[in-house]
Image (cartoon, rainbow, N blue to C red; front, side, top):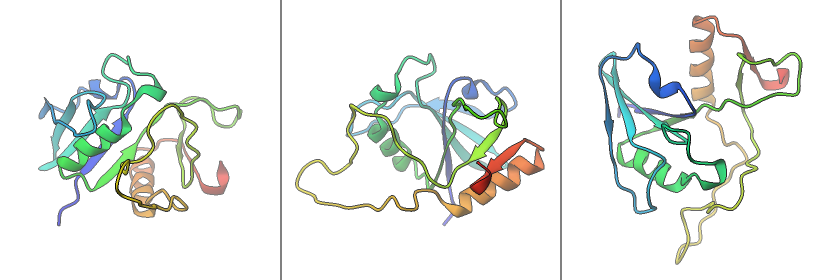
Length: 157
């Protein structure tokens, strides 16, 4: 089985001009409307998908993002691996803008939105004790170091 990567990201990432073989596609979800169309990129004969989390016009607030529809449409496209990129601030002087932080844990502080795919007739429990793929973190680390991006992870953050 070939892995298919998707990236969910914020403002500006959908305007990367170095990708030439791209197209925006629409996929329907049973969970409603996703944040936007999905950008399909062909790079090195592999498909990569990008979904703008807040919409291309940055019009959807964090609590109004339809995460369930976003994940559903990516799953329908065959996505096996998902990287979420966020631009957030830091109160630490050693983490100024422009630094990449690879997380191994997170706390979801959004509210006022549905948090499960299992609304009715199904009782399901999914552990979030280890929510981040070590394999994907390692792949990101290798790529960021190769491009010489400043990187923080693990106990360094």
